[in-house]
Image (cartoon, rainbow, N blue to C red; front, top):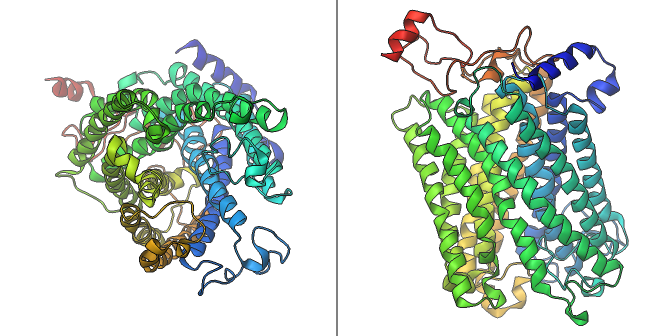
Length: 593
């Protein structure tokens, strides 16, 4: 047993199991409770970001200044004096603010808290066979600093001038000079909030990396780790290396806005392209920070419900490492329109296309896992399959963005909006839903309702494709993104029925999420009691009771004897073989021959 494990064992023995309400639910140092806190934050962010998206879609379908426009139903109560939404009518300033905050909230306060904050915290100690994270107090601080960041971001809705309105990329000089957007403290708070979030993420990343390296249970070698742990380990490294770049850029932007410097403002000799380089050096790895954990989740869920070993375990792990490594050298493909030299553009084009190789390896291995399997179409499985199929569509549309001549034509159109949503929503969110349905029994000790889960999946899958698939057509037709009223442009008027059609799909997509909320909270209190291992899975978290107690595993820590995906093994009568189950010596010897 390593020194780190011995230290944590001694610390847990010293901590009382019974603690008060505040220590248990608010200022908890237990990784499981911190994971649930991040899940709550992420679900709130998902609701907030979703409402903002529906406001944007409503404006595009029925522009406030158009013949069919008018107040957004249900929003007339907001305020007759609110400059963003007076009497429920969306203004141009409000539209800019809503799509900026929709993207910011979805990326930083919905997907990251759910996939990285929640499932990283909840799963890592359980799946590697540890009592807790390496630094529990630092873990608690990472949540509270992250929550502070969210409060700062949400508070920006209530300051004079409203929240940030320069897009989630906040390109300079639009973001650097307050008079250009009319937003002052809203943009300041946007910068400060993301700097604070960066500190939170660094705390979490250090904890994840240290825990996975030092605190694995006896027998848990690197290549016996579940792929979801590999994905969270790689994500933590990406966060550790990319966030300081964004934090530095945000600090410089704040100086430009508040101290009169000119890092990015050309009026004083600044260089706007410097912001783009710094932002996308963070921004492209950020895309993989959002989707790599979902890759790990899908790998585990597909194997469990296909009742087959994962196809090409080592190739899957190395593919994620390859994708993460390549993500550092492709940021320039976001800047093909910036006047980049053709030679440099070609190098970024080729390096971006190379990412297709590890991505294709993963896709073929997921299909190989499904091939010939005894597939169980549970709700987690449906969401995992949706993740793979949407990831394929998003990946294929990404090839157009990687190609310099095509990207120059379509870059600022709805084709990009479709692509990023197929990757980040179709990928990350379906992965997040698969994770929620799959690990809910372990988190709360109850099962989610399968019927409601499948209805939620049907609404989401249909609504999602209804909304985003036609956007490819809009984009190829030249429909610009980030415009307030498409009917102002004659060449876009023929597309207006499609804009309306898309918004109906978005409303279906939004309505579907209400089913998730009902199912989540109803199941938490009234769902069927969960067994210790209701899915008959192999990984270590299912060795613990549901929900796991203080210290996760009653008695000594489990010992690991094999990999995590030995389903339908000929060595046992059951179709699963847990990692911690020790076979009789004669059986193991027979297997060796």
